Length: 359
Ligand code: SF4
Image 1 (cartoon, rainbow, N blue to C red):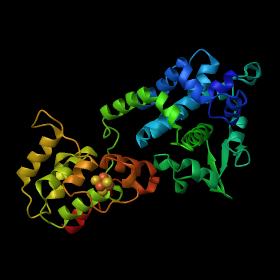
Image 2: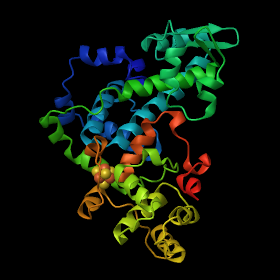
Image 3: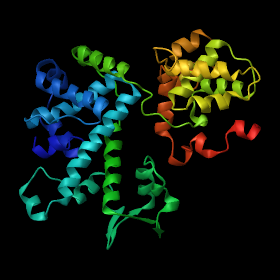
């Protein structure tokens, strides 16, 4: 096990090094507290601040903490945890390799823990899909689309790129971002997986600890995009009823108002949206929304969980994704995460919202 493996544990050669050392993960989690502690730190930091924490000084502990962290993420089995974990691993690797790419070649030859661009491209089978050109690089369009798909921002859209003979022009910095994406895909691959009961039993406390952190997190914190097409079926149905001017029970009104507040809509925007409804009373709606937001009450109310929605009969048209989540916010977050850039047109920027069209 070499320092390079500990710095880049997602590499094929790092996995092979763990395998060659005939490490029994069950035994590691049962006997090696340093590894379990570092693995927990990896996941906790990923969830809370987008990093993987400070590396352990011992190469073996640092490297083994990676597969154990993956076991923890699998046991927690919550989309936001998996996503943040993969993002944090990729962000750390990105920081490391960009620094190493910038280092001169002489230095590199004396530092075995360093990685160069060609090695990283080869790791992801990109050697023939990327070529150097005078002013930067060219990436084969298929590889580009795969790696740029999750990037936010118009600049990444293919229509805005210089494309010639199936090759997309990118700068060295952009290529680094695409490599970060390849790493994120690699880390995400296979997660979550089934964990043997004996290992799960050893990690019970750590998993509970992570679950507590997750439940304290404000899941709505990062969501401020309004894309009704991606709403969970229950909220689509409620929004549809609002727009058709149908009467909504108090609990249903509360659920849709809390959801829209949670995804970043202002009181005015929600009031506007409800205005098409004949049963709508502007003052009452404004009061209710402000109340949910915590402006006219000491409490900020959040969107009801699926179990509450079900008990009120507001859970309708469940789809496959519903089977994997427990909260409408979790559903929406996953949809946003999986969406292509061009699907993410915010209703408020679109100017084509249904209420405007109907007005
Ligand atoms: S399972 Fe949850 S997200 Fe899906 S429709 Fe029911 S309440 Fe909505």
